[in-house]
Image (cartoon, rainbow, N blue to C red):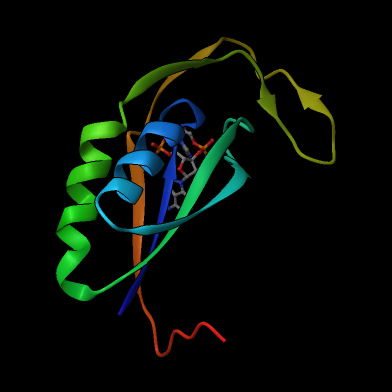
Length: 108
Ligand code: 2BA
């Protein structure tokens, strides 16, 4: 069994979760924040069997778009906002995915 962590854009999270649910996957959504842009994103936790990883990948590819984001400031957590000069354009997403091996999963 595997646990997939998928970090996706908030705007894609409803569609991605709905498509995953329709395909029979169980999904937990966490509200998270990217450490670079300091902008909210969504992390999906998906527990699934090894042979279904590619199905999850396909759904995330289909539902999660890449976007350009212009960062006007570099936020420095705990030290307030810091402006490092010129705005910087970065490409974000579609999905950043980690696949972890699970020793045991139980619903008690
Ligand atoms: P953020 O950390 O806010 O990063 C947003 C985008 O900024 C990234 O898009 C990337 O284009 C750029 N970026 C991030 N760190 C950078 C750095 N040190 N130098 C230059 N550019 C940088 P994505 O790569 O698509 O990542 C989207 C979000 O996924 C990230 O938001 C973060 O929340 C998560 N993420 C991506 N890679 C990760 C990793 N290796 N470990 C943990 N979280 C990751």
